[in-house]
Image 1: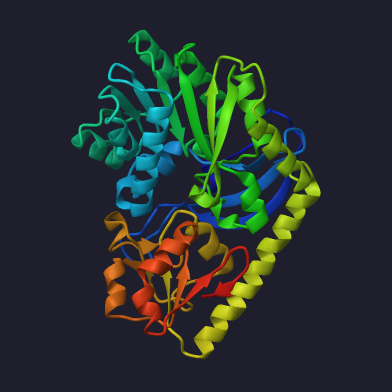
Image 2 (image 1 turned 45 degrees about the vertical axis):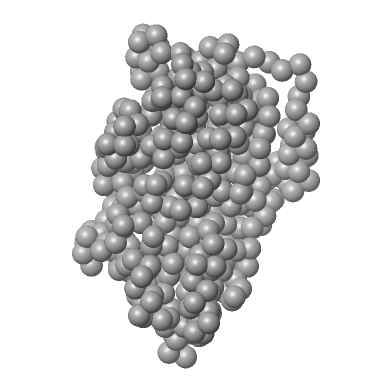
Length: 412
């Protein structure tokens, strides 16, 4: 795929050319491209990240066509993840109550997946519309009577919505901004369909906990950007939006849920100043901080491989829990394959019977663990580690131990 890759020459947020490469992960399989059989060829591409010295934005250097990443055979369905069902139920209730959403209000969600969140918003208004480019999830949403257009959201789509005289009271962009190769164009497109009455809710993984915990595996081809609040403010103000409030949420290792509109508030919210100060105190404006982050990645790689090789020598059986997109970077960069772990289990039926690329680890339902008890479980879906360990407590009683990698390798 290397001939189809475009390397960025300027920052995705501020267009500055002051980019410095931080880390090179080599050739990595495209995330969420699962194989149907062992050794099936899966697309791969180079993967590296750079830091913008102007706006302090961290970003992937490579542009892969989003249609390749998201359009066909996309195996991620929000409704298949219990933790997300609870998260989105609370999300809809909180936002619906806060902004007094009522029956006639149009709620528009960008990257709505299989309609899980919008389905909860139907408790407030039946006037919902989803936009998502992935064929399978979009079809699933429409079957649940959550109207969904299977397209990538951009300026062209925004203009179509505008000509239809659709005026959203609420626009939701939940964990999509990082998946957009050109966030400037994306923000401008949202501006096209916003009015003075529109509230925009953007939830995005926060760069600060990623740097603090060294959770580098969130870096993969689908995630073009890793946002600090500093770079988010620059992006949205350039598009004519202002922050009214921020909620900190636990999803994705630590995210920011940002409330914006085109109406400028009288005062800068206190939470904004607080988070900006936290970012400064943790050096998110300094190149040196990201050089240290790069070094921690390689240090964890050495520690993890050494530990897994010790378990191999001791004839311990190790399996992995989760087959998330982020595991593509970790498994590939650490060189973890069927020699070191036997297979993966995952909660999503859409992934069962598939093979994780490059390592070609088979993916089974969680129920396989009931009759095939491992000595160790390496948790790859680490953002759900607590609930995973709790759900598998019966294995702990039989001697199974859990390996958690972040912020440093530990055995539970």
